Length: 173
Length: 180
Ligand SMILES: [Zn+2]
Image (cartoon, rainbow over all chains, first blue to last red; front, side, top):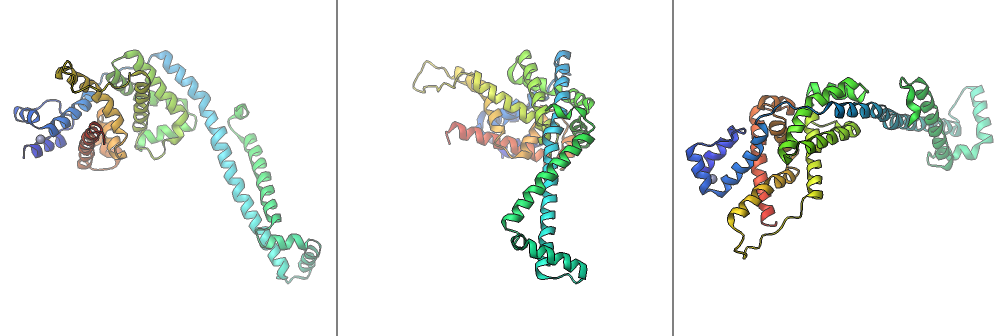
């Protein structure tokens, strides 16, 4: 019963550092509550005299200087490359998909327009191996195509993003 | 994350120096206090606080999902202290119970000194919500209402996290003693 009361007291008064007579007697007799009180005291001490102290000005300006150099690095190194990488993956996947389905159409002769059909027949006759491989989406050619588009998109978008970057010191990493 | 901290962090990540300066101002005193109370050494407290901010500069991007900048900073602060104690504290000497020359008074003093370190290590074993509540209430000195807003929960819930945290810590310390 005393334990329950004591726990209720700790629950309701997480900042308490003093006990009334009844509870001080109890923690002398109950090891479990004594431990709980010890822990509460360890923590509650931190809330006492939270005087406002500051770092030395020298330390602060040192930190600000480091942060200034790092904040740009964060952008160039991680975000910049990360974003460009994702962009290039999306573009190359979508393009490979489009090209693969285009060849699928060519192979199946799905185009009715005479001139387009002529063009498709030309492609079909001259690049049939390529077309067949592409139509599976797993062939060597489609893989090579995907990688090339990825590399081209990555380099181009990286290059243009560098040109357009507000942070001109982007090259310093 | 609370609105204040969230916008500060966003601005800092955009490269705004003023935001970083405000983050330092908001937390330097709390961190210095924490370290001072943990190791009773003003110079060490300054060095550790500087180290926390240096780690913040490098790791601020990982703060997404944290309930406040403060909880992240104090998590780092705890790690720094644990590392420091591991490096510089002599290994714990087991008291031979058959040795009658070791008085119970001395034993009590050693226990008291070790309690701080044990709690520090045990905090890391608590569920995140309980760790956050402890740090926000005791280390940062926030009110229960403020913590409710930060953790997005009721006052009763905050009290519950704090209470459960202490009960769990008592359990962890007890298990440590019994060598479980
Ligand atoms: Zn009890």
